Length: 436
Ligand code: HAM
Figure 1 (cartoon, rainbow, N blue to C red):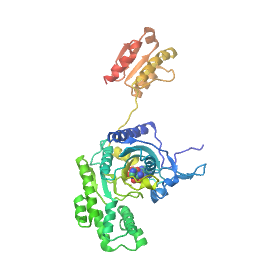
Figure 2 (cartoon, rainbow, N blue to C red):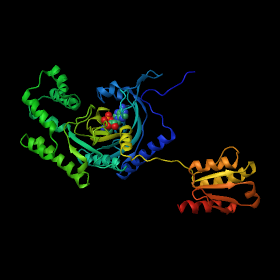
Figure 3 (cartoon, rainbow, N blue to C red):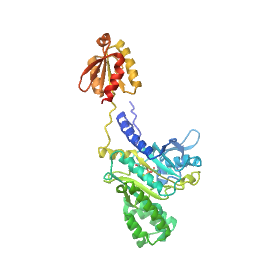
């Protein structure tokens, strides 16, 4: 017999898995709302052109794409950023600024499978449109950090590496490189952590070997880990760099005032692979360095316009759910979520069942979780099911009870029993549950 399995890289969520995922989504949503972000959603299938030449070569190569029955080239979304740019761009004039939006959604990338990487995953995306200054970055980096702290993680568990494509551009410009060469160097910087010196191979093939002195300065720049060292290196290299350093001071000062300084590291090794980033960029990692990136984001001031909207500055980030769940599990911060009922009903037979239904329905309408056996069975079996369900209370609708005009209520922890008149069942259950 043929057996069907999930496609490689796709996940199934059994109830206990979905309970954990819902827990994560719930805290992300709660945190975003506390920061004044509004939730949106959009289609999972998009025109292929939305990603072509906009997301970057890596994502383009990983697209799940096909031609639909109407002959349209379409793709399952690999990320939210182009989509949210289209949404905001279409109503840019009507939306109150700054536009602070978030979403929790599923994405698809045909990636090589590794720990924390799949072909179908979820992201929490948060973006701010309409704010050109670092005030938007303060808000977003703070939200990113709080989205992780909300689960009990702290600065010993993760950190945010903060970098700046503008600073790289201005610095390399000051060192005499033109734009194509600057892009070539940034490509090498993006790969340097993984490949070491080999990261410069592509640059050498395209432009010839990088001058040794220049390369030393680039590698030294890569090592910078503090604002003071940045200021020292860039002090006399022109107004653009001086003005940019003022943005850095504002951003780091704001985060420090919020108490988030211990979470943020200056790290110019982050330049981000996606094609559209234009300014500050950042990524979150676990401190032990055992896992892939937890989150990534940055400023992308040109993308709304490139996708047909007005010129609108933008910055945002996404947290992925896979690496994040691994980190929570490693730290023992993923709760075991039990979906136990409050009340389990033990029912004698068909007549008793009808009597029980009235209370079952009334209790459920009050918001209590109530369960009962769908088929008649022996009392012993039902009591076992009641105990295994994890319920706090059992309601007993036996023939004797019905004849006496009462319902028995049993505390499943200490096994004490009381008799209740049928009209009092709901109030007695409510008092018992609210007393804890
Ligand atoms: P990204 O760096 O491609 O950025 O993805 C953000 C996060 O999504 C990653 O750090 C990772 O946790 C998760 N992620 C990405 N690919 C996979 C995968 N194949 N399997 C599991 N998790 C994955 C973006 O997507 C940008 N659009 C973020 C953004 C929002 N920039 C501005 N606004």
